Length: 211
Ligand SMILES: N[C@@H](CCC(=O)N[C@@H](CS)C(=O)NCC(=O)O)C(=O)O
Image 1 (tube, rainbow, N blue to C red):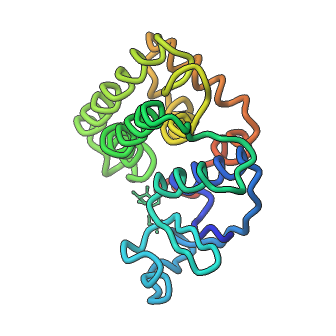
Image 2: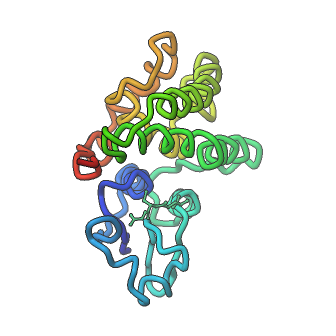
């Protein structure tokens, strides 16, 4: 199995974390950001969006990180299941993954771009405050859920925790989690104890910083 994508991309990181959890071996090829590659026609034939990650396996090609997570979780080579068999339990997992795609991650990216990817001279305090507040609104939804259960889809760790949890290292590092959100903090600390998180999520993002 080949994963195309730079290791500094949070969407690539969540796939690498899932591969670790599932003990699936793979080869990663740098693409995107400073590595380019996504501009090449050969890459566009795999992913017309020219984005990473892309999974390639014996001629099978898949893009969109959460589609990749679901595929990996249901793959026969998975050594443990992160995607429940039960339809309702799986739908709850999907719900949190969709929430991450549609709401939580776009809000995170808004503030991350301001604080890390925009040169300080070009930042506006107003935009920082607005994007921060939008992300806090998303985190508040997680806080409510995680004060009711240990993980997003219930009592056991699963793919939804990988999808949303992949944002937590940068969230904590940038001081974006309000101190009142104790349940998110407890959850993030639990996730940080997993080897795949330590290996792929808790990494430096300095190469992304605008000078
Ligand atoms: N919804 C897509 C988003 C993919 C995406 O935006 N990837 C970013 C990196 S996080 C990308 O490819 N950016 C262009 C680049 O790195 O050159 C997914 O979840 O896979």
